Length: 302
Image (cartoon, rainbow, N blue to C red; front, side):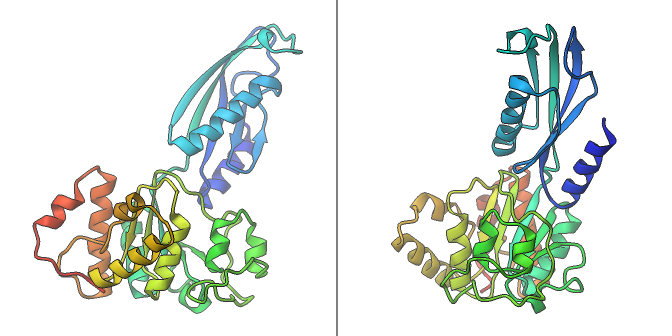
C-alpha cells in the first residue's frame, strides 16, 4: 500500500471517519495500475487512484454504497477493454474493505450522566463522541478520551467543516432549547461532524426534555443501531406527544428506547450509566432488551 494512502487511513479513522480502502489485488495485461495500488474513499473525499476511467468511477460508487449499507467487504472485477474510450486491453480485481466502522456512541448531553456513560462506553469498546452546546460542560478534563463537539445542535447535522464550528459561523436554530449561541472559545473538534450508519448508537441525555426532543427530531429518518432517551415515563410521554403532533411517525417513536437503560433501580449517574451500557451491550449482541426489562420491578431515572 502507498504510504501516503496509509497516512490518510490512519488519520481519518483516528478522527472517527469511516472509509473504504480499495486495493487492486490482481492486474492482468495492460492495466493502468499494478497490483497493490490503493485508493481511500470516504463520504466526502477520494485519495489516490486505481487507474481512473469508468472502472474507478464504479469502484468509488460501490465504496460509497458500502458506507451507507453496512457491507464490510466486496470484490469488483473489471475487463478494461469493455470500457468506452479505454484500450488498455487488461483486467483488474479490486478488493474493497470498510475500515473504521467500530460501534460508535453519540452522547447528546455533557452532564453528569453523559460523563459517566462516556467512561463506561469506552471501556466496553465504543468509540465515543459527546455533544453539548455549553463549552464548560465538555472540556478535555471532563471527557479525556471522547471526541468532543461543542456547537449549536443544528450544526451537527449540516455538512460543514470544523473551522465553521470553531469560528461560530453555523446557522443557528431559532429554538431556545438547544441551539443557543456558542462562544468562540468552544472546544475544537475534528474536521468531520457526525457520520450516521447502522453501527451508531445515540443517547439523548441533555439538560431538559425540550432539548432531548430536538435531538430526536434531528435523528428522525436515519438508520441507526439504537436511539435512547433518558427520563421518567411522564417526561418521555410528553416528548413523544410533542413529536407526534409534528407528524413524526409512530414507528420511529416506538423504536426509541425509553426510558433508557435496563430497570435495575439505578439512582446515581454512574449506576444509570451502567444500566444504559447494559442495554447497549444487549442490542449490540442482538439480545432482547424488552425481555431483560420485563424481569425487573419498574424503577426509572428521571
